[in-house]
Amino acid sequence: MKNNYTLVIGLEIHAQLQTKSKMFCTDAVQFGAEPNSLTSPISLGHPGAMPVVNKKAVEFAIKMGLACGCKINELNYFDRKNYFYPDLPKGYQTTQDKAPICVGGAVEIRSGNGEKKTVRLNRIHMEEDAGKLIHLEGNADSFIDLNRAGTPLIEIVTEPDLRSAGDASTFLMAIRKLVRYLEICDGNMEEGSFRCDANVSVMPTGSTEYGKKVEIKNMNSFRFVQKAIDFEFSRQCNLLENGAEILSETRMFSAETGETYAMRSKETMNDYRYFPDPDLQPIFVDEKWLNSIREKMPPLPAFLFEKFTSHYLLTENDATFLTENRETALYFEALCLSKIPAKISANWLMGTVQSYLRENNLEMNQFPISASSLGELIQLVLDNTISHTIAAGELFNQLVLSPETPPINLAEKLNLFQNSDEAFLKEAIDKILLQMPDKVAAYKSGKKGLLGLFMGELKKATQGKADPRLSSQLLERALN
Ligand code: ADP
Ligand code: MG
Image 1 (cartoon, rainbow, N blue to C red):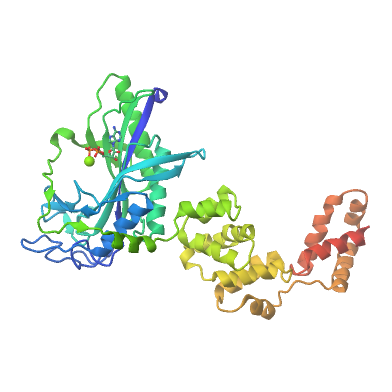
Image 2: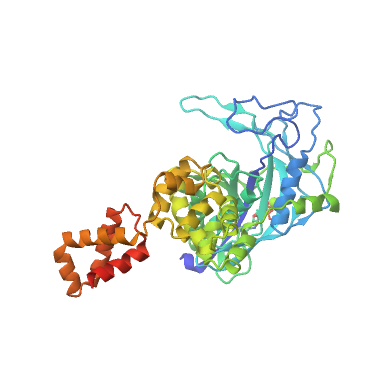
């Protein structure tokens, strides 16, 4: 049945900006502080309190606009969006309506099958977050924490260009990656600093006219976004198949049931009576300011992906892994700069380093070994001074514990150098072969695969320090 319908999705993504202070006053922006400890007459909306725009927040919004190829509105201003809710003591949210800071732009994603898709943006505007209502289990009262009130947000609004729940989730990840590269938002969905509303409609496949949309509010995990959209797709198809009408409404997603449920319908929706905020000056973004922000833009994931595949000749899979976050990408480039071949650098980061991070539940920016130091360690392997097994095992583990010590000093102290002493290795080989006469006979009668077994024994006998190339030469000579 779903085959007869096309799913249409547009996202509205809220990202909290990582500024020190709030959008219009000096209250600190901080998650998890004592409730109502980070408030002031401005964030509490006392009459007569005068807001002032946080310049850093405006710069962050412009950065995101530049990263998405938006047009930056030279003259933009704030509006009041009027509504009553207990988490909004002012009675209006300060936002941008008619003249947002960024318009247009697009972000490219890779669909599940590797196909590239362009998702156009409608706009990116600035606004402030509301406070938080708290309902404690077993307590009939509602509590209010206004620490979040006035926290700067950008809202990224797409055109209805997405066609599957998977693509919607991929797009959301791409946006989160961007805000993290730009260091304007921590992208933490659990703490609510990055969240998403999904607008969903269906139309008969082949049609060019969009159906009526439903808005699913405030989802805070990639999985929920996918589940909610998939559920909504089925629900709307079912309604149409049964000749029923789809209502324009706002719905919520329940993680318990995996279903969406109606919250309010279009008819009962607020009329926000937007008007320009008379307490705030319009923002004028002149060419000089814009250029100074442009100059501070970091390399972005799409640029690095292109560079990693075309300049460093990595596979798309490797490049995708390495550009997942800015720290890993920059670390990779630093390794290459210290003369480690690109593919080898990539393998170390995707293998040994990644396992270490995963086992210790760390992020790349918490990795203790500097790129130059890891480069020195890898160079010891490339020079045949230390075996790969020991370098990625014992030496790596020691270096993590004392990252300031040069790897070669550690190797010396722990006696980890590879053994290329021919006489020593020959003696060890002879001893092994003497102990396994039946295996030697089997090898001689044609079971050449046993070479691996002998190599393994030699590795054990030398604590992994036997030079592998020399060892296999000596082994073959001894066996033949
Ligand atoms: P509204 O007037 O209800 O605020 P907008 O046109 O401003 O609607 O769009 C809000 C969001 O809804 C945008 O992300 C847009 O892409 C998306 N959207 C608009 N129409 C549809 C539709 N028919 N199906 C799915 N998403 C839609
Ligand atoms: Mg709208």
